[in-house]
Image 1 (cartoon, one colour):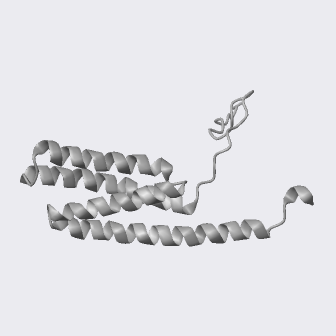
Image 2: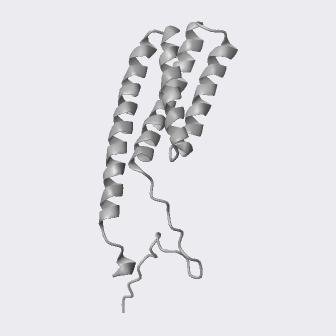
Image 3: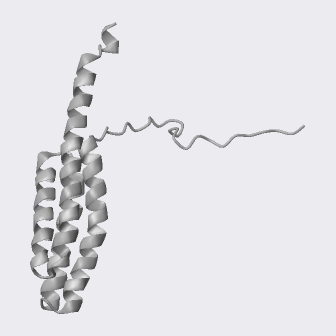
Length: 143
């Protein structure tokens, strides 16, 4: 006889260990982390352009770009708190200010500021609507 075996469910917890419950991320946090993650690549390339064009000394161009990259990387896990959103706004402003070194950065930074603004506004609306919907539904343990 042919015996059919199924692969174990990768999402199931191993025997003897309870499964980890993942924290539910807010929409603002999810959208913000997506925007910042894409922007990190662009900021890295912009720092290389500023360095390559000789607009700043190498240490300042690459160090400043590295500092902005570090700010953005630190911002992603902090997006669950209001300070993370503020750090995101600061990162957007610093990137926009880099346009004074290479004018094309103004255009790219303006696009990211628009995306960031849209994500923060719509994410906030969706999060408020979800909280209101969760508050309106009855608690299953009280039934």
